[in-house]
Length: 329
Image (cartoon, rainbow, N blue to C red; front, side, top):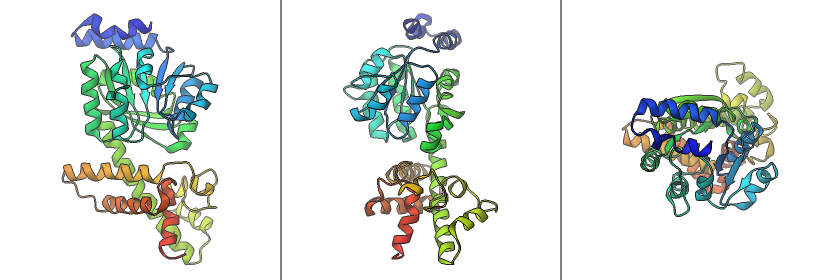
């Protein structure tokens, strides 16, 4: 079945309508063939686990071997490199920290494209520059493979529970094949348009998330200084017009909520350095499109300062702690 899947494009040549029909039907038939997964960090690890829970044999790889142990115990086959994964799997998902990582994993000496099979479906859930997604798509297409960008929103909690939101960019005729896999890891899988549009949606979302988190942290800090109990203030905000995800689901103040990074010394979650990276992507795209983003730019500066002050590895909600330290408390 995998061989049939790999050969779907070369068997039917350039007749796109026929190609599309064959690809969709073959991928549906091959629904439980192995899936490659590269990048087993805070997000990738639980995502790959959910694929296993849904019955998919997973073949995984990560630059840090210790990241693979837990998945291996669940039955995943661990391989040495992305190229080795591409040699064995026709459908591969990548979840990597940044644009340079994606470029290396796809086009490097041991990259996916060194051994990719014709007809392979490559889905990148990293958050990177949309232009890099487009470059990877062109490189994959030359080898007869399809590349789609599918960045996620929801954080580690949603990754664990399989309730992520995927924003997907790529050929529309391939969306259902991608959705079949992504639905095992997410509650929402949204088609955004051609390659790069998934990244565009994610960058916009994370810019708003950063601005909202800073606003929530400032608000909570002000209320505390005015003598309000933080739990009471959060309750009031969450039944009022100031309510947002950062206040009702991911509150940055220690002791207000359980099961969030602020309750665990800001460990786990979405790192400050990654938020700074995403805001940098937003800044670059805003500059290129001549789009004014004054609050986005300020948020970028704040998270860059946090990285320089020892918060790089802490969750981005630690901006609350940063603000408290800034005022000398």
